[in-house]
Image 1 (cartoon, one colour):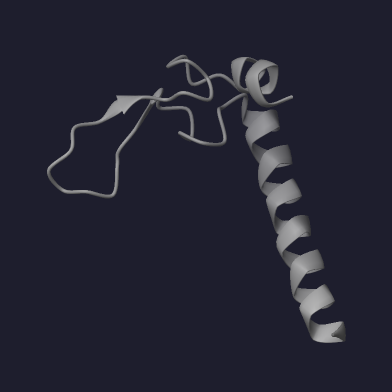
Image 2 (cartoon, one colour; image 1 turned 180 degrees about the horizontal axis):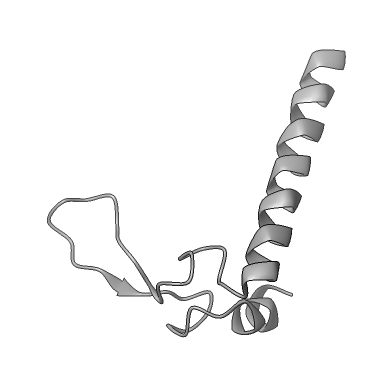
Length: 66
């Protein structure tokens, strides 16, 4: 099970590095600072990011996901 643990650790480190980058930029990690997300379906419209309440700010994201 060593390689599974290695993969999980790598994935966790990568996500933490991404969060640090987004924190330094001051942008929401889920919408990348846009304030909205686009669903995977081609027929659906974009909607306000639920993680930052549409502001696109890291501080608002942290309040919700803290």
